[in-house]
Length: 118
Length: 112
Image (cartoon, chains in turn purple, yellow):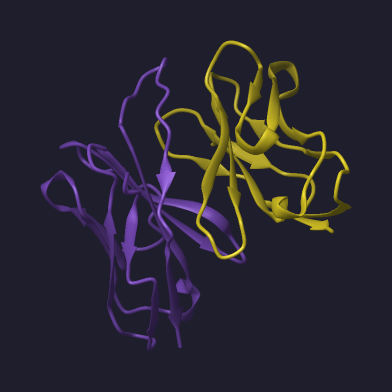
């Protein structure tokens, strides 16, 4: 079946501009995650959505970063006033969303959006 | 907060050689463990996972990993690598909550 899709695949922007990155999760997955992959920091968690619950925003690096998930499906990650240190590959993942001590929830990743801030 | 360490940043080996990549984590409670692989130009793919039960888990493409709780380790192994195993390998841990904490990755180059 269809996997996680992300758009655009590449985005080049100028410092100070705002950008929006989109993620379409696997159909039926209630949990959605954003991660960032950069040379200096490796793979870092940014934010997590589970159903209608309040998102876990604990990984967002600054208040310039925000994300929303409309209708429990598509998600948009917005970076305002981009800085050069925001350059990275932004990865989206989704999972069935089961939780608890016996959960076997597994995350599946999209191809990512490569963001370059000039 | 949990952390994950992958000791080898780069590994170079020849085809048919055996591969072992180390992964250690710091977290005292129940964990779920994963290995993901990223082939050149491709996205992260799940290689194998451990939730409970038999600590020796088998994944795709002949890979296996062993969970040793006393050593907080989840090392990845393959008895005989192929050129197509050239990739970057990431160990990840899911502890409290659902987010994954990743190791720094190990780049593996298999020479034909």
